[in-house]
Length: 104
Image 1 (cartoon, helix red, strand yellow):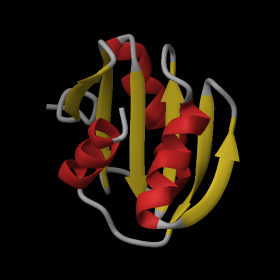
Image 2: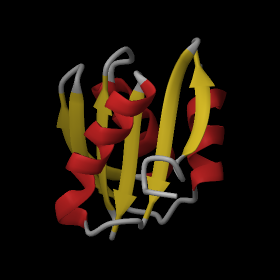
Image 3: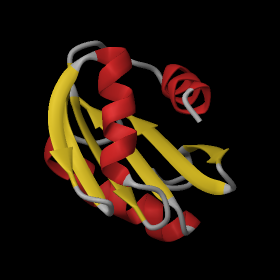
């Protein structure tokens, strides 16, 4: 399967969120996040080499990034549709799911 199809998918507030870790270089993370968001009609979160990119059609990307920063540290920012930055700690897809579900 491709990177979009192999993303971990979860639901937050009845919106789909696709997560992909270390699938592509940090340079391509934003593009992959947008592809995932478009494909699942929801939100794409891609983490690569400590960088994080979030692209969202229905959740607030910047709020998701702040939630992840609260748990894993880091910096960055963005808007309702797209956010990016760095994470201080290495996180797994399962940990991201726990962080995002725990805070909603």
